[in-house]
Structures are given as C-alpha cells and as structure tokens.
Image (cartoon, rainbow, N blue to C red; front, side, top):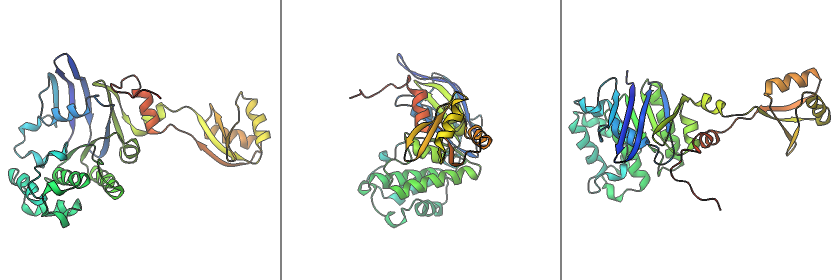
Length: 304
C-alpha cells in the first residue's frame, strides 16, 4: 500500500521541541507537498521516518513498519536528503553500484537510473568534479535505484537548471500516477503548485494544514472577479444596486470584490450587458501559504 503513517510524532532536543505531536498520513497515487518555514520540522520528520533520528514519542512508519525493519530498504523507500554528502572521490557509477550491492539490486539498474537522470555521459567522472545540479541528479538517481514505492524528496529542484526542474516535476507526477507515494519538501511555491495534489503544512513543529491543493487555496481566497466590458457605466450602476463596486484595474480591465464569476455573469445577462472577459481571481499558493504561516515563521527578515 506504501502508506506513510505519522502518529503523535514528537522530537525534543533539550528544551526545543522540533516536532510537536504530529499526526498525518501520506497516501499513494498523488504528490504530497511538504511545506513550512525554516525550522518548522520538515527535515526532522523525514529523518525520523528514515530512522536517522529517534522520536521522543510517537511513531513514523510505512505500512505500519519502521524503515529500519526492512531488510532491503532501498527497494521500499527512496530518499533525497543531502546529495552534497556523497563521497567526492567515487565516480557516479561506483557510488550507485555500492548502494545497489547493499540491497541486492541488479547492476543493470544502475545504468538505467544514470540514463534516467541524464548522467550516463558523466557516469565515470568523480563526484567532486560535479556541479551542484549534477550532484542533485545523482541524489535523485540514488533515490530511484531500488524502484521503490515510496519517495521522500527534500528540495529536489535545488541547483537544477530549467530543464532539470521540468524533468523532476514530470517525474514526480509520473511516479504518483503509477500508484507510488511521493512526499516532496520545497520552498519553491511555484513548483509545488505545479506538481502537488495534496499539502501537508507545518509551523513550529505542529500540523497547520492537511488538505488538497485546491482546498488549501480556496479556503484562503476571497470572492473577487476580473472582467472586461464595453459597457462599464451600465455595469457599475447595476452592481451598485447590489452594494458592489466596479474598480478600475487598468489596461481596460475591471475588478469586483465580494462576488464570483458565475454570479456576476448572471447579473450581466439579466441586464443585457456584454462581458468580453470574466475570471475568478484566487490567491496563489504563495499568498495562501504566507497567510497561514505568518505567525509561525522562526526566521524572518526585517522590512526595509
């Protein structure tokens, strides 16, 4: 089933509670965005799930089992946490061969993921000669090596060029479409909006949201439309009768607060007013995220 299950997960470091009684599931068949300000507990949660740290209390399991209980864990879970920690003296191919040998993964699989990640032409080069983006691709190749049902990706677009960003976005969606579980942590709202179906949002170690992408944005959007019309005077008068105001947005466009496109279209049709364009305006993921996490950011820059 490849279901990630987090139950009352807590991790304390002295007097600091990095993760605070988290409970949520990450389901297969969709890309789940894992969001939160710096210090929110995202990386700690991933480390706890992978057995790289121990919880103070609670559990983090995959189908009810701890990651450390799997005899060939790379076949179950692929993870990208810190690709810059790869031994620089090894070649890309040798790095993957060593990982494959520890989990009884066929050597042919190494060549497949090198090709998939676009690293086949440089597979014989030492990792210390790689750029940031090339190391990132190698880290992703390592996560894919065991053809796992669960993928944990921490900032997968870091250092990638535009082609690489498109590649990882399409890869994540393709893996989810195959029924795999994909949990991706990122600070790039545009990429999360383009790739994710569902969102888990943390703040100060606590769960702030566990909802669909559309539901998250819709809950933080006000009713507002943008339109073009050849009859703004008549439309302004018609809106005023309902207590609404037509506001000039420039470039021949107008906005109206407190109404949806469907409602305004009905009003215009009733008054026989021609509309040349009509669109609901919703908050972007970035706007909705900042609105939710404004009081939970540990590090914020001072305004100029």
